[in-house]
Length: 302
Length: 285
Image 1 (tube, rainbow over the protein chains, first blue to last red):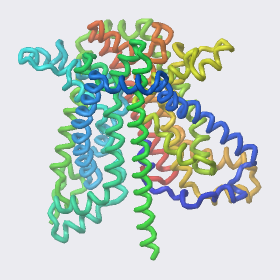
Image 2: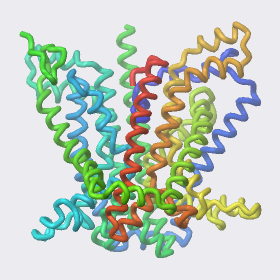
Image 3: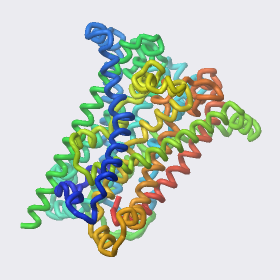
Image 4: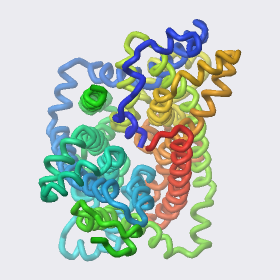
C-alpha cells in the first residue's frame, strides 16, 4: 500500500534546503507561510489533538482511576486476549508474506498480477464484512455451523472467531512490504548463491533474510499494530462477553457505552501508547533501511 | 537444460532458484482458506435470495440513506484529504520547519491508532463540551452525533493515504524541470499548475482513491461520533451489523454484496491508477 514507498530510499532527504535556496523552486514568502499554516493547522486539528485528548481524558479523574481501570480483571483479560490474537495472527501472516513474496518476486508465472491483487483484497473489504464472512461460515445457521454445534466447538462469538477475523484483516501487511522490496532487489544474489552450491535454506537464511530484514520488520510492526487494534471485524464475531471474548478495543467500547469515560480512555491510552511505540519503531526502521542504502551507494561510488 | 513451457511457466525459462512449487502452493492454499473461500460465502449466501428479494433489501429507503451518507461523506473526506494531503506532503518535502520529523512520523497515526480509540477521541474533541466542539457551539454548528461527525472521522482515517502516495513522487522530482520552466519565464504558479501538477496528478488520484475506498468501509472510528440515527447519520457498515444482531443474515449479506462489488471496482481503479502513476513518474511500485 502507500507505506511500501516509504521504506525505499528517499533521494531528496540528504540535501536539506535545496528547494528553499533555489530561486526556481522557491515560493514567495507569503505563499510559503500560507501553505505551511494550512497544512500544519490541518495536522493539529485532525491528528495531534485526537491523540492528546486520549491522554488528557484518561487522566481527567487522576492517576488512581486510570490505574484502577487498567488493572481491572476484565481489562487484564482483554489485554491477554488481544496478545493471544496478535500472537497467532502475526506469525501466520509473516510466514505467508515471505512465501508469497518469494513466489511473486523470484519467479515468472501466469496470473502473477491477479495473485498480487488478490493478496491486497482484505485491505479493500470493510472490516464489518470481514467479520460477517466468518459468521456465515461458522455461525449457527452457517455452512459448518451444525457440525460444530454437534461437536460442541464454538468458533464465532468465541475466541477462535476473533483470531480468524484478526488473521483476515492483517493478511496483506507483510506480503505488501516484501513483494515490492524483493522485486526491486532482483534475484541475482540468490541465483549466485544457488549456483555456488548453497541449498535453498542456506540461500534464504544467509542471503535473502539479511537483505529483506528491515522490510520484514516494517511489515511485521504494521501487521501487529492492526492485529492489536482491530475493532470492526472482531466486534462482529465476538460475543462481547466481559472477561472472555473482549479484546482491548472492544473493552474500550463497552466502558464508553456505559458512560465510564475515564476508564474507557485509560484503556484507550494503553492502545494509544502502543500506536506511538509502533510509529517510533517504524521511523527507526526507515532510518536504518535508508542508512543501509546510503552506505551501499557510498561503496558503489568508491 | 531447459524447462518445458507449461501453464505456470509461460516463458519456458529454467528456474535456478528452488522453492517455486512450495512457495506458490502455500501462498495459494493460505489465500484460498483465509480470503477467497470465506469471501465466496457472501456470494453463495446471497444466491439463496431471489432477485426480487435481494433488490427489496438493498433498495430499502433506510439502506439507500446509508449508501448516500457512506459514499457522500467518504467522497468529500477524500477530496479534503487530497487538498490538505498535498499541502502536507509539499511542506514535508520542500520546507524546513521545527518539529518536521515529528509531523512526518505522526502522519501515519491513523494506521497505528486503533479505530475505536480514534472514535472516542474524536467524539470527545468535537462534542458540544469538547475542546473543538465548544468553539463551534456558539455558532450553532454541531459536529458530533451529526453527519458532519462522520465526515470528521473519515477525514482522520484518510490522512496518510494521500500524503504517503504524493510524498515519494515529490521527493523524486528533479528540480531541473522547475528551473527550466522558470528560465523560460514561467511564473511560479504557472510552473505549479502546468509542470508540477500534471506529474503529481496520478499519485494524487491514487491517494484519493485509496482514502475513498477505505472510508466507505470504515466502521470503528465512525460509530462513536456519528450518533447512528437511522436516515440521518447511519453508515452502511453499521446497518450490516444491525441486521446481523436481528438475526437477519440474508439482509446483512445482501448489503455486504453491494459493498463488496464496490470494493472490487475500487481495487481495479486503484490498480489502473497505480500503473498510470508508475508510467508517468518512472517509479516502479
